[in-house]
Length: 514
Image (cartoon, rainbow, N blue to C red):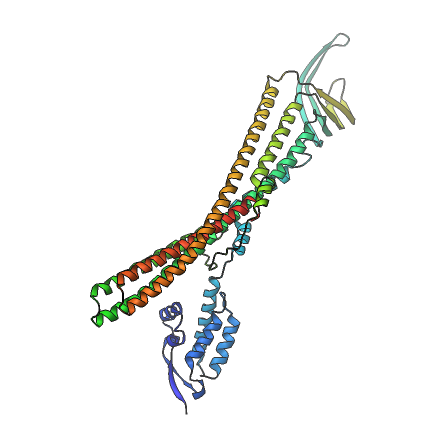
């Protein structure tokens, strides 16, 4: 004997509210109630539904194959659905999988990887590094010759009058003269006071500094990513604490309602409980707005579209212990800011050598193969053609340049001095940042340990107060105060965890370990 059940998508997917709303709004044929015959051995429909959804929500992305298999095995022995229901049910499964896939989990490693690929500041720094590599050539240093192919040609129409002591006066009306010349020429600066070799060294240093600046930008970007990522985690944890308070308030409303109905308490207790519930519900809405804003901030750093949906991790890991001796000894050896300023001093010194070499003589070599042809319509020389190799040189000795060389030398000396000041300032700043980060790390770690204990105490106090309220042994005000203490403690705990993570990231950034 079989028993008939009414099975609708509302009963089938009763657990997820978002899916219920989606099905309800579609108003499709599959939303209508249908009757299916179930055998007596397959009557535990609710347990089957729970099993299906436990498979579906096992991972953040959802395992569509496992879900379909579970559904197939489950419904094979329950009913024989119509063709319309099969199509509708497949659409529901695809919708579930696409929704879960859209909310994929973004780990901190994934976020850093995406930022290194897409972040615009990283791309700009990478282009600057590449520019330094492209500019570092022997030709840019002036060490290679220039080879060129040249050609000129022309035609002239002249009325010529010539007078000589031997032949007297000669007149050539409308004389036509055609000329053509071409050559392959090599120009090579063989000596410029050693400037070309100094320039080549300077280009090497500029390329090396480009790599350091790129690494510095990478470290800064990763630091920003860590701060933005765990800010999202922090805001989600605060929302979690607010939701816990909402659950306590709902229980408090139930207790107050029961007490008021039985005449054990005044209506004001019930009204205050409902007011507190509404306030925390509003806080949850506002906190969700904050979460969405912090997610958009993170997306900007990732260089991705603001519409991309993702979820972050639930907790802020705390497993770092700084090596103080290593930090003090190696901070100036590996910090990108200090290394970049050291390179700047070397570049300024090479620039000074370049300017000093400008006062020395220069010698240029010129050689090539030349061809020239001239064709006149009249005159003593009707055609002239020359061709062959040539070689020559130019020696240039700067005697007076209006004080320009001296000005450049003095300016280069000032640049060196300024670069040294910048280096010392960066060392002092890095040293101060290191001490501040270590102090911040120690203080936040101490505060975190205190607040972890305090959070357990406030949670226990809230549980006891709520139970006392249920037994009629306390007032609603005591529960309200215990609840406020718990939420504030949870917020402080989350902030301490976040601040400790930021201090950790700062220490790693100073050592270029991010």
